[in-house]
Each structure stands twice: as C-alpha cells, then as structure tokens.
Image (cartoon, rainbow, N blue to C red; front, top):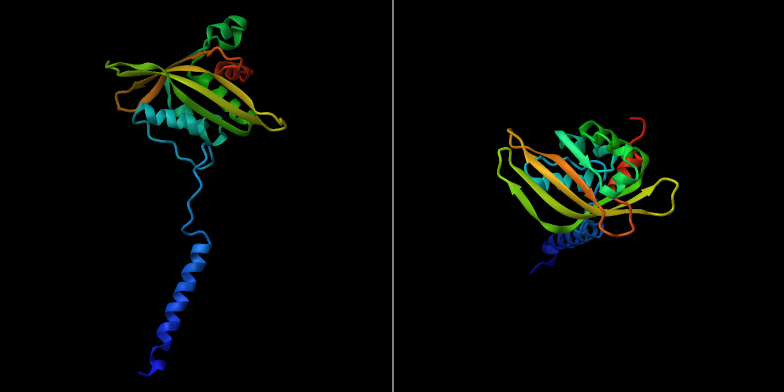
Length: 203
C-alpha cells in the first residue's frame, strides 16, 4: 500500500481535531451563566397571566430600563395600600395612591438607586383566592424581600414584608395589577411601602 496516498486525509483529520479543540477551548460549548434579573435588554413579558406580571416585577422593578414595562401592567383603577402601621406613623405620603403616583414613584426609585436592585417573592404565606368575575380576579399573598445598593453607599438595604396583590383580567384577555396591599411581616426590616413613600417627592 502506498502510504503517501493517505497522508493528506490523515493530516486533514488531525487538523479538524485540533480546530474543534480550539473552538471548545474558546467557550463555545461552555455552560452559560444564569441570566441576571433586571439587566438591560430583558424583554417585558406579555401580560397573559398573573405569573407573567410577577416575572416582570421581579425583573424590571427598580430598573431604569424597566419602568415602562412595570407601568404598562398597572390597571387604570390601580390602588396601593400601605401597612396600617406605616400609614398611621406618617399618612401624608400615602394619600390618594393611584396609578399615576405608582408610576412616578417607581421611576423615582429606579433613578435613585441604584447600582443594583433585586426583587424576590420568596413564598406564598396564604392560599391564593380567585373571583371568576367578570372581570376575573386573582389575589396572591407573597412574602417578599428587596435588596438595594445605592450609588455612594457601601451597605445593602433590605426591605421585607408581605404583599397581597390582586390581578385582574381585562376584556382583551390581558392581565393588570388592580390592587396592592403592603404588610409588615414582624421583622425589623422596612417594608416596600416605606421605600415607596420615601420616593414620593414633589407630588
């Protein structure tokens, strides 16, 4: 057998193996890092069910790039209700809290923060309720915490409590946030309502 006739094929095979190894070494087949919530470029999920809205809150709340996404989920009849203790201690910031105020406060929070802002709905502390309507409504009872790092502050601020959020399905089948009741959870941490009140400035 003439070995010279098979040498090019052998060289080509060896080159292919080396090329594959080089590509693999460059990370083409490496496992991707998990997606970080709230990063620029995350799309706003369609408002097809309450889970989509919760995901949008988790990803977009407190992010400059996500304020329009969050505002788009607020029902025209939206109302926010603070924890009764927060309200009794300082009622003025919470007066007449409607859709417009919620949208502006959310914009202020995003502008003030933020090296990082993380929302976590940790668990349900009560079984969800549903009103078949019409309009159809679902209320969920979440334990939550927020972690906020502001520019110029070395420490992370933790907000923690409970949110009773009522979602409503409209005539076009899209869902909105109709009502948000904030409650303390007995911990020493300030609530989401306190964060909101601190950013209701000038209106």
